[in-house]
Length: 405
Image (cartoon, rainbow, N blue to C red):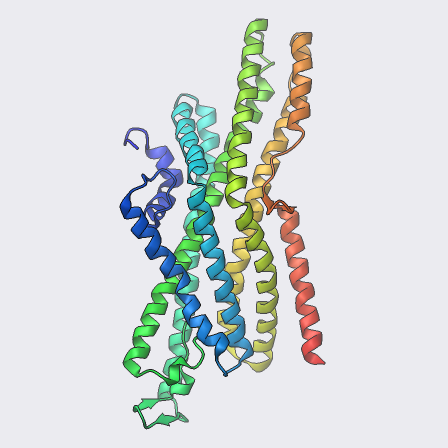
């Protein structure tokens, strides 16, 4: 891509995603080279490496409800991350069409002040969401690592520790890992323990970056599509307002219809790329929110504020992820619905009778809004988010009653 094509405007909207996704090897416009194969191999290894530690946890004899919830959360996060990486990479050609279309949109908007303002407004929202999600991911990851370090320091320096004479380690049975590892703490030395903690810290921060970048890329392409739908809505409102020759009215109308068809294709590209991700994300988030909500209640009863902090941080981050996918679909849906209302509110009575009939057919087509779905089973919008919260709350209530009995 040449520097004159990738100008300041498109960079303002997608520069953060471009930088990180090029490092990860999944940027849609990145050229396929041998080095990218090495990138993919390394990233897949980093993404799946937590499964080694989780296998130790699931096959170990030390069973703890809090640790089991953490292990299930890590397992779900690892699968979700791998699915995002594979789906974005497999549909790179489709996402490349969306990015190239965005570049062309910014180039054409330079001479139209009104269009430029609308696009800049949506680009600001996209950039704000991207930076907020990155900062939140790093904050959540850092707080999680800090809580594990503080617990280990407390067990090390406060009295009542157990001394393991065989390898001169203090309190090995109380060692806590970032990723649950079962009884691994009893089988390694202090130096090995520090190395494992450092490796797991890198794993956790990498997971946070990958999750936030994949989610911000989704919200970026959906918000850009929403901005283009808003522009199309404005043009449909005014295309029949100005007095003009019949031939020009028809040309304008044909161009608007063609643009609508292009946006339909761009929306389908987003749907083909993210529908499996949305399905897995929202279904897993429902279960995870229920488990974390139950764990928070138990921590409050036991006055375990460290575990309470960890669970609250995870709960907020998982909730934000589900909001991103639901609101991205909701933005696109409402933007497409506005086109139908724009056609209805246009000065259609000023155009020729033949063109009125064509406008009627266009209104019939635009009455079907753009949709982003979760696995083709449900629509990703605000209603789905409300349903997720209701379902999670119901699970928490059932689990509370079960544990009480």
